[in-house]
Structure formats: structure tokens, C-alpha cells
Length: 221
Image (cartoon, rainbow, N blue to C red; front, side):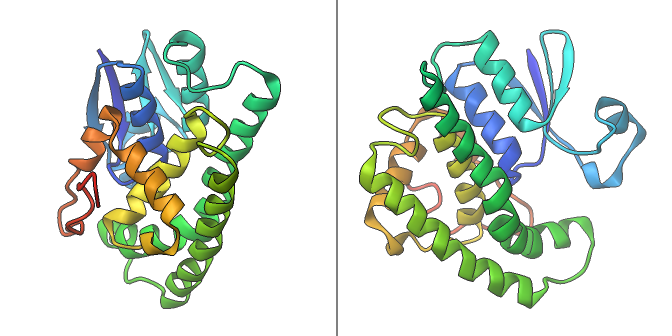
């Protein structure tokens, strides 16, 4: 069985978990206090970051590389289009969420509200929280624009781009930082994706000291 060293609210870990579940790969989840940089974990990944997965007799790190490996070694069901243009668009959007959205929103909201407390780094920086709250509106509007032109974020089929977006948004939804009333089309998209069997373990996550809102695990909001 695969073993994934993860943190429940990490969007990068959630993206890998969604990919594994969609491809029906059984995995053991091991919560990792990566910030403590224990010797055993540093041997698994000297970068001291999650996710790290043990699969096919090897250890692998970095969520993008892990997801690409899963796609190449377990191609069904596919999370990437078959044509180069489509694959480019998926990779572009995955990078959008894992880079731009992460830096402008996730790090300003989730990391300030949750990670600082969990890792003992003090209290949230209110200026960062306000910046994240402003920035997420722009990103939700961009999602709405994409979904006004496409069935899914990158095209007519669900792809890794949808999982990357949903991984970040689900983490923020756990702490009530997503205004689902801003866009009906985005809300409908998220309802579709969180209704998938792959999402079940994510919706069951419980973080000590933090309770999700009632709608978090409600498939119909």
C-alpha cells in the first residue's frame, strides 16, 4: 500500500490525495509535523516539506511531480487531456493555483489563521489576512470567467486543474474563508467536484482546535 506523509489542510497534500483517490490507489495517510524537522522526515525529504509519498518502492516529494508520476504510471482515469494544448492549459492552471493563488490567498488566510497556531508561530498578521480576503475575490471572479466559457476549468473534462483549485478552496472553506455567494457558477462547480467519491476523505478531515462550518461536508451546501 502507498503511504502519504501529509498535513490535512495542506492544499498540496490534498491535490495528491484527490489524484490518488480518483485513480483508486489505496493509501495510508500519515500526518507529519514537518515544521519540527525530525531526522526521520528529513531523510524522506531534505526540503522538510509535505507531501511525501512512498509508492512503487520509492520515496517521492513535490506535489506537481507526484501527480505527474501518477498520471504517467496510472493513466486511467486520466486527469490530463490527450492533446498538447489541453495539457498546457491544465499545467498553466495548476501552476496558477499552486503559485499565484497560494502566494496571494492561501498563505495569507490559511497559514495566518491556522498554520501559525498549529506550529506555535504566534498570532495572525491582520494585514496579511485583509490582503488575502481582498485577493480571493479576484481569483473567484477569474474562476467564474473560466467556467462561463468551459464545462470544467481547463476544458470539457475534469482534470488536475480542477483538483488543484478544489484543494486550495476546500482548505479555505474549512475555515469559512470562501464566499460561495459571489458566483453561482463557481459554487455549482465546487458542488460537483466535492460530490465525487475522491473527495470523501477530505470532507471527513477534522483539525483539533478548528471546526469547519456546517456546509463544509454538505454536498448540496
